[in-house]
Length: 236
Ligand SMILES: [Zn+2]
Image (cartoon, rainbow, N blue to C red; front, side, top):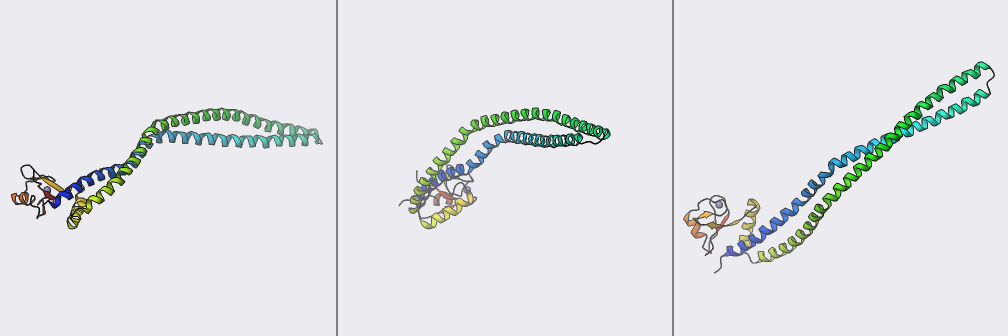
């Protein structure tokens, strides 16, 4: 008669391959985000450059409005100056207008500086964007390969799940449960072969001769005394 562990052992080979694929699939999102993390430095620099440009633009806008309102003031003073009744009044307006015009001049000088800053800021933003684009391009292939790998692995996994489900149908139900329980617990192997010299193929401890013999007997299912994995000693 064939040994009941034969089909379980064959199932385990399929499960091992499936588990490997599922692990690789599980790790891919992390690998992708590790690759994307390479961009974080450049992204941050771009953000800072954009913030700084925005700040300069806002300040410039404020100053422009300020100049506008000072110019209105000058216009108003000039009208009032025309309507001055006395020389003293007239001179007072000349003085006032002079003060405001001085303010306008100062602000306009600042505006020129701000406009220069803005041009520099725009150039820095463009430089950061360019650098980021180059870096994105650099990782695009790697990310694309990983996406393709995901698709490939998913397809393989689906086929293998169907294949292992068919293989599981040929296994003894009680034995299959035991196998599943041990596999979930040990995470590597549930059924191990007896190694030459009578050692457990899982934990490599020396097995008692009785266990090594029983592991060959198709009417008996024995476990390793040390690690609890099912030991199998197929006829050579
Ligand atoms: Zn063992």
